[in-house]
Amino acid sequence: MQIKEILKLTPEGQSIVVKGWVKTKRGQSNIVFININDGSTLKNIQAVVENGKISEDILKLATTGSAIAVTGKLVASAGAGQTMEVLAETIEVYGTADESYPIQPKKHSLEFLREKAHLRFRTNVFGAVFRIRHALAYAVHKFYNEQGFFYLHTPIITASDAEGAGEMFRVSTFEPNKAPLTPEGNIDFSQDFFGRETALTVSGQLEGELGALALSRIYTFGPTFRAENSNTSRHLAEFWMIEPEVAFFELEDNMNLAESFVKYVISYALENCKEDLEFLENRLLEEEKQKPQNERSELKLIEKLKFVVENDFERLTYTEAIDILLKSKPAQKKQFQYEVAWGIDLQSEHERYLVEKHFKKPVILTNYPKEIKAFYMKQDDELNGAPGATVRAMDVLFPGIGEIIGGSQREDNYEKLMARVKEVGIDPENIWWYLETRKFGSAPHSGFGLGFERLVLFVTGMTNIRDVIPFPRTPKNAEF
Image (cartoon, rainbow, N blue to C red):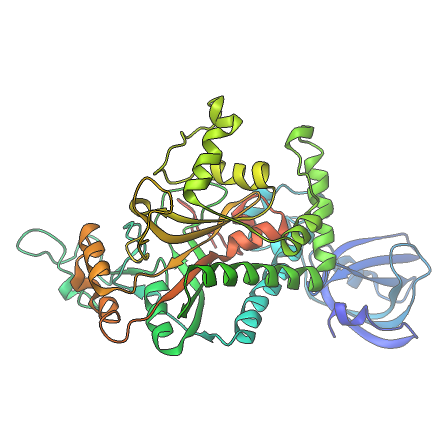
């Protein structure tokens, strides 16, 4: 029985077996207290060893980090800090941990724990983070299942660059420096395993669209990869993406889906991860005490999550957002690092100003300039008051993070899509199958992508994306 289940019992002296890892051990010659945790809950259960019950040789082995099983009686606790405890009768030590065990009962920096990623799950912080991550992943599947979506597994190895940025990890069976060459001196991928150049996927979207144009509602939830040399607290080279695609959905439907989706999964975490969220909130409050008053969050973590769930997201066009930014004090006083002008790709500082300072709530921006968005986005028939051509794109912006969702209505007109493909320099032969769906029963359809780690970052209140994925992959780092 897991500790979280044991803690739900009424202690009546019943026989119980507790298995887990020793968090702390303290005591005197006549009585020893051992706190045990198995990762199922933030709370430990205390084993009490009375004088002479367990041999000194066994007790010496039950050090911090050791894996043990305690058999004894579950009784009400007379001491403060817990409602029940186990009066130990026997202890079995599965695996010892000597004094070199790095996760000793003291405060460790997050930087130090990233170097110990194989052991950091045993800390309270990372136990809480990864239990919440699990709950959010479960909520994702629960939401889409309830909405009539089908879970589609799109390829991890692909020959298409959905984003068109070229930042892809190549997949090849050629040995380094031994790849065959063409007469022109280029690598001859026709002799490689797949007979062509392939890479790890940056998105399952293009293949997801194929599924939606037959099954109507699909979603993907899988790993994606970007060979982007961004060594920041917001970027990973390997991360997980959730990408729904829906036939017969237009931009407004897409915005409604995105808003209801994030509210659902955050609500699920609030309802099912209360203990872990309260712990992380208190941790965040302690951390913020070190900051100047003007840099502290206006809302506590749980208040912030409830605020997102309980309020409608502000919706406006990119053009309206640019107007707001141009009139803002940071723009007037030239305090933005990046200049504001129509046609720019908004930076995080611009997005966060709109969310945190101007509207003080999540924001959905729509109708971006065509030139800064991907080839597959549907072109607007009208300019929507904008000075240039726009597309039916939408980005959901969150406080502390900026963009958390990016999506659009997809271009369903074959001629327009083909013209855009050629305009951005994509070889139509490489995506013939994608273009063909616009020739055979094309229909309006929309979708979006949500970086799962950014969602976990927001819900947990952590500040570095490397701390919400078990084993982060970043430039110059592929440890573990």
